[in-house]
Image 1 (spheres, rainbow, N blue to C red):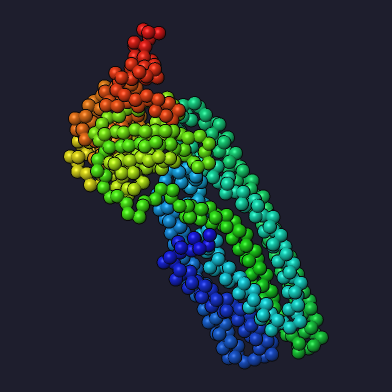
Image 2 (image 1 turned 60 degrees about the vertical axis):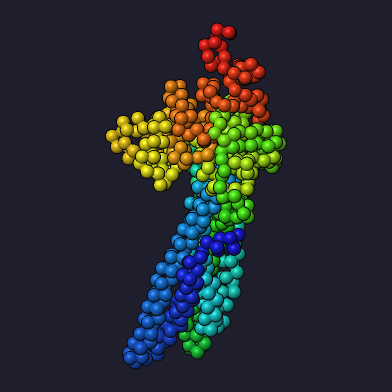
Length: 580
């Protein structure tokens, strides 16, 4: 896991290492200051000349300035390294997700991916910042301060033999109790983000069913769960400070009481006022370093869960990979399914598709009908290799889709999905997702073919009209037609319409299909539809039932041979009512 995350450090290794070096200098000067301060106190007590005191004071001032500069530079390089590391982590995760297949994405929920790229990365960033700065400073300060305390205080430093083990044991117990609560928070963050995402996406449904109060309660439950866990953990962690103060005040009282007696009894020969002053300072440094180490331990343990979740994304291997020598050109739009069976997971018990054998010539128009859950969408998703078949083979242009370069294959196949998505930006920007180099004339031609040009021209800004996020400022039918135009701009060899004219009227649907026949006769067109009228004039119609091809043929043939098709047709026409 550490090796995986360390790869994202890259150009920020230098400031990270520089921080470690500068921190050592800061600690060195901080530990020396009490030593020289003790000498100054003793010099003043013994009546030293003002010049000697000023000289030593000047040295202390220089050390203080150097320590301050080291701290400032360490803060700067630490911030540069930690924020850069977090940026690289987010970029690497996002890049990795872009390479995932649908199967990989199914493994992580979208809410979980959002949490991993935001909250988890922030936790790891903060832990890394503490690691390269505080995690170096605290142990060095502890070692140097303890050493100097024994040099300066002699037997008086034995107080640390009692205080340090008590503090270490207490801090470890506090951390051990707090960690389970911190760990449970991350799973609840996923639920919180999922609640927000679902609510925002389905806002119209929520308002349509007047379910705002239910959504508020669901969100409140998720938020309260996180609050409760954090509160429980913070209550435990809050015990750090009282424990720290108890040990620090015990140390001060012990040093002042025992030290004063030693000064009086030895007349200042064993220990003097300056040494007691230094011992008090070193005591605070020792205890504060232990306090920082306990906080580092808690933070690193918390961030370990975040680091694990980030690492899971970074090491996830895409289930779809290109061969060593991929085919770089699609010959034509012919499609072959050869004994294809498919299930979404190797652990799934049931197949979504079974025993599919099918040949489609380039340029054909193929209609697909079937009830809900008959795997119509699953069938067409195998063509651009959004999933790999479990058994058998799918061929495009006579070549197994697994032999193609993935980008080459998908550039030859345009899909207008059942759930149309438009992105925030202008209509022109959205259309150019299909072809970023398309001319204005090509945009207009594609929109005319998709029956979208007329309503686009009716907008005051035409093709420069801004689309809101998710296309909320255009109707469902307008969104579908823009998505069809976007797909046509790819000039594909295969065009797949997955129930993507369901929101347009039958006349517009007929005009779109007539345009396909006239303007893209060589493109293979696969139309998934609920309306028989949308596929009635297709060269081949497939009737799917429970993941199998129940019947196939033209409209006339299916009317004679397919009971399922005939029933659908009769239900959708007046003739069906008369027969009933």
